Amino acid sequence: GVNITEVKRYITMLFVSGLISVCVSEFHTVEVQPAEQVTLMCSNFSSFITYMFWFRLDSRPNISRISSMWSSDSNASLYDGFQNGKFNMTSNTTTLFLNINHVDLSDSGLYFCGFYSDGNAIHLNVDGKIVITSVILSVFA
Image (cartoon, rainbow, N blue to C red):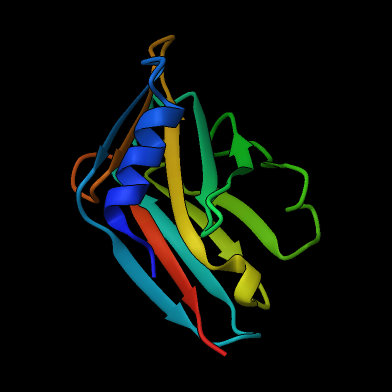
C-alpha cells in the first residue's frame, strides 16, 4: 500500500521551492483488475485555467509526468513512458480526465492532477475538496 506519511514527506521535498503548493489529506481509491480500463477525474476547474497536467507517484518512489494540455479544447501532450496508446487525457472545461486502457500492475500508484493559471504558481491540492483530486490506483492480480 501507499504510506501517506511518506507521500507527504516526499512531495514536500520535491516541491520545497514553493512553485507548487501541496495539501495532502485525503485520497480517493480506485481498484481495478488487470486488463480493465479506468478513467480518473479531477473536477471543479474554472474556465480561467491555462495549463493542466497529470503525474504519478509510484511505490519506488518515482514521480512521472504523464500528460498536459493548455486548454480543454486543445490536444493533450503525452510524455516519455506514457506514449504507448494506453493513456489519454481529455477535458470538458470543468473536469479533467485521464483514461488508462488495459491496466497492469505497473500502473499502480498515486495520480495527481494540477493546473497553472494566469501567471501564478502551480497549485496542487490533493484533498478532493478545493480544486483538484488525487487518486490511488491499485491493480490486483
